[in-house]
Image (spheres, rainbow, N blue to C red):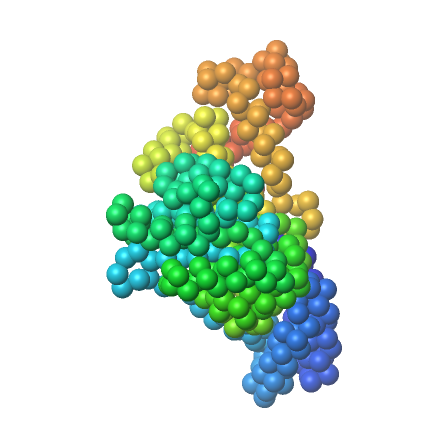
Length: 441
């Protein structure tokens, strides 16, 4: 989502780092460029004004002007201001002293409330909770069916009462949760425009009747400044507790994410980073600031790996690598494990320095799909013993995977090169391609 913003800020920082000496003049020039970049990213102009002023006040201090690395200090100041702008620290969900905890989901039509409700239920279930989903959207055709289908996928029950009103369904769901020993109730309300007075009153009534411990406002981050305006209108009526940004993996400028918290003064609690039901992240302002500034987010990457990688499989793979027994079957399995962590673009964005790669330098999603198709077109014997793959077999694999013989040859060469490198490392040797380079400890 922040790729364009990250790349433009990186250009500004490159100029700053190149300055031998920092003065008030070149600080002002750099901040003008940062201001333009933020406005281009659709950040609210009042937020930009306050942000730039905050950076300026700290940047013209004597500490920066006399520093040996003034460019780096200013980047740190911008980082700290970004963290402050987005909320300083992750904001946890509130918990009821006496179960169930009631969470009410609100937002505009098409913002992704129903999908988020299921994602939240899956997230809480993974933490050992026992959630129940409540189908309180009685207006959108098939909304109840959608929630029931999503609930079935994550094995979370859905409380639905076709023919009943949204207020009654929400109220009844609390008793139902108690009777079925469910400790979290997630109420999926209907999407509505903030100018629809009757629908907004219904939301206020639901809030008054169920007394939720948490009200989350779901925002489609693709809608830009409209998202900020609607958030303010909903907040004035509901006084919600937190914000959820959906479609953060989309091709959008990112202004809403940087503006919305400052406008309504409520924390961003979750971000949706994909269509899958496990593509939900707790929002960490500092980690997001690091991503925006091209510093990567190794902590989140490691957390994702821990959640999705099987420890026994990892140990088995390590043993194979030591014995040089790594096959195409192992490679395919690791490819699938990596793809479980999210889109390749998202993963690459968490690695420090990847934002500085030239466009097209990093591998794309399509290339992984092609590699996977080629490996799947091999027989089990070919995956285990790729040296038996002759010309005839290469033609068959290319035909079966919808690729060319050249593509198959490329994958085979890359795999053989990787095997050589792994054999060298397993024997304690440094492969030729790494000689003369200082490898990380």
